[in-house]
Image (cartoon, rainbow over all chains, first blue to last red; front, top):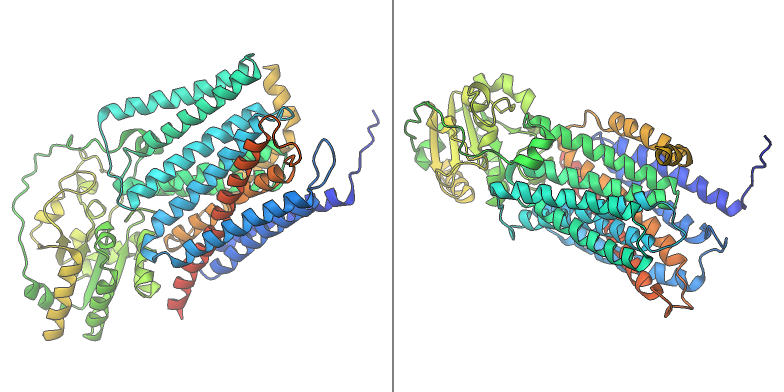
Length: 472
Length: 109
């Protein structure tokens, strides 16, 4: 069979070629982003790819039906919208405090999800659009990413508290099935177009609610997992929209981000030794793990004694957790570290992969306080060194140093890799009170013979320590 | 069943791309040091703003002369919002990632 290949106009070929280039830029950019030395360059590559695709689309895209290009009046609207979005986006991104980074990333992710959902919503009413399935998937995934990320934003910003009750799991499942049923129904229905239009808005509403109920019960140490997962969703939603337009740059960019986000999500799950399903549906059992072990009593330490202990050590390891971020104590922490170094003490930070509320949270937090990043040591590297460490200072971390993960098979966190603080010669734990961590699990580290507790707000305690060390 | 086969056939190129891209994503992202988890996530997030292309196409081909007809006006407004949100995601995402990386860089010396 002889088929004559229809050669489109040069503009269209150029456009497709620019998409290919943009896709390559995305891949190379993300590759560079995954190595410390080239990371910044990688970000610029990805941004350049995006800019290229945006401009070629504006000037070369032709309507599939009429073969008409984009008219100048439309172009003006596009440019104005992009200018407004750029200015607002750049200002927010520049002005916001570095410590508000987790919620900001969530906020941007939410806006991407909203954009995907809107594009899919409009395309659903387009009679020329033949791909109902991907349109609906783009709509629901985008909507879930949007409302879920907004809830995550609220939680990280401290506006929304974690709500968890057993019945929420059922509500969750109910909405999930409602979303799936809605998509299937709209795929097969013969209902008149007007009815379908109303249906699609209802589906949108259900998907938005599902996003809320999905993220609501997830909190604490599971936050990095869910943020990374929502990130992956936004990518997939963009790819679905790419299907509608048969646009390779969108499909590749979206799926690539989706896949990368999924890998990061699984990495986070691995760091907690839990399955993704467990994180999504479960939250921790909480309280279920009654232990026969005698809890014993905790021993407090005075600021003076702690200061002396630290100053006369040769090797100190600081284990930061979410508490450090909440108390905004990273600068004081850095001050103490420098002071100790001046006294000839070797100080390192031990970073657990899921410490904090987003992947890499502690790294960003400490970088903001000017801690040189060769001082930040990953869990697997620091653990063999623990028995030679004189003092471990745990600041606002709990589950990531809980030895129950190693030797308490009945514990919900059993099997999770931890920073082996209990192997050090002395342990100082800074904590607000004796409340349990997010997982509501007893931490036997606190009752250890070698452990001394320093109660109070991390920032105040560190400040007092600094003053005390100076006066020694 | 026929429907599924047909869907596969008509979208075979895209499905190939997807399958290969997933492996590519695996390959590129594996073994990222935890220092870079946040910037990587944030940079990837900015790339997912590629949906902006969809927004450009939508608003670009909106019929400005017959806005009163049907849902043209509503679609135009929704399209503009999609563009705004998309740009926010792209620009904000790249700028904030750059800021983070700059912070890391400074200390390296």
